[in-house]
Length: 344
Ligand SMILES: NC(=O)c1ccc[n+]([C@@H]2O[C@H](COP(=O)([O-])OP(=O)(O)OC[C@H]3O[C@@H](n4cnc5c(N)ncnc54)[C@H](OP(=O)(O)O)[C@@H]3O)[C@@H](O)[C@H]2O)c1
Image (tube, rainbow, N blue to C red; front, side, top):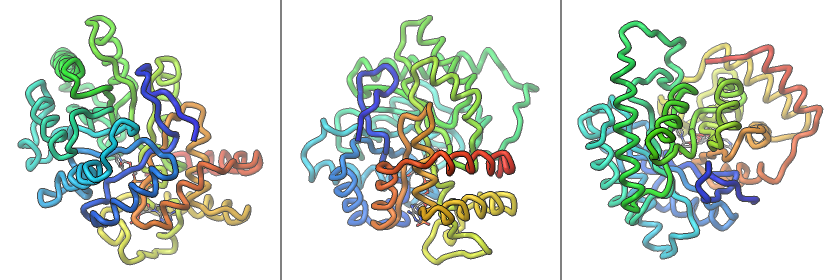
């Protein structure tokens, strides 16, 4: 796989990144090890995890995914050929550092625990999982409301967090920094604050992006292209929806849907999914591979974060990196998108 630069960091990552958030809930440590062995054997050098994982987030499993990766890294023995991305959790989960807002103190606290679980001296990409102000809020909010927002306090906090991250970069505990579930405004503020104050620069933004949720096509696509920030797409299969497994009210056992963590199901997303699945089948394609291959083809994409709960899923998903979609399929995808532009 041809490597791509993460922001302006000189760190190079594969166009596929291995997601990990099911490890510790839907997957055991042995399964996590098998996925890591297979994905790295296929050339993937980029692994994404978080303080919060596994998901759905709960106190009993928090940190379990990083612990598994740390155990695998210790067994593997080599560290420097991998780009390990992790995250500090945003506010709202009281079992994680009291659920408080991110600030300078919380960055230091969280990072030390990330490093201990991962059994490593440094994290290559450290991301803010979601902003304190939570506008984006996992697609739950539909509009920005300026009423009651303390603009000056927000900017002070962004600078404080950025300053804390910068110190950790200088201390060698982090190589690069990034945001997640962030808006174009938020990302631009960080870039501006870095420039004015000579602080570390956000190298990436990790947001949801898939055939059903293409909000980043406009504002963020422009920001990342012109500002040299890497776009990392999470949930490229809309949490499994785009495979078609939930169509016709199906709820296969053992899936994220059966776990009750599939809030994306609704009649509108079903209609769009049915159209994409029919398109894939009409062209002899696996719907999951078509969805991933399309994500990979986006002009502003740096890396697509794949997730799998079974080895056959992982093999199929990695296979998408070897495919290209015909002009006809791409045109049909655009037609379906115009019919179902947003399917929350
Ligand atoms: N920053 C954030 O807030 C955020 C949020 C979400 C995810 N992420 C990152 O992105 C990664 C991927 O997210 P995601 O798991 O939501 O990605 P996804 O690709 O949208 O969904 C993956 C899920 O779909 C099913 N699946 C995957 N491949 C399949 C295939 N070929 N055939 C049939 N079913 C298949 C599996 O679930 P079942 O087996 O249960 O059906 C799998 O766990 C995560 O691990 C995490 O690292 C970040």
